[in-house]
Length: 157
Image (cartoon, rainbow, N blue to C red; front, side):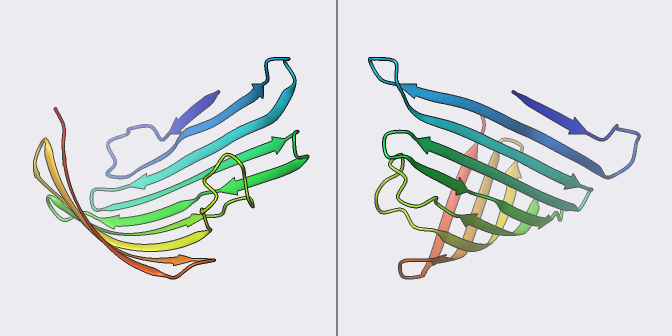
């Protein structure tokens, strides 16, 4: 189940959209048809965009009710991004959060909560080709912090 909401295009230079709000309900079954876990995925996106400014936010929640262990795991992953467009170049700042719901058996045993700050620039040098460079600082709650540098070349065909 999902829905999208956006503003009407009335010739203005700005737009607002609530998009891709999704609710997915799943259950896992054993061979004997006993419910092992109930899993819910809930997520949504908000976008505000003008000719120069882009504000983007997303949140996703994964809820596991594990009937085998009688434990509930609730994980959350939001991010917010602000960007400013100048011709074909878009510098941006993004803040990501990942909060895992304890030792959830659906994830790897070495996952930890993280807060990440990213400064990046995207350059659309061709209509079908973009170069993205990012520098990030990741604060892992149960591990050492990391500085990350990434370069990405994307193309559409």
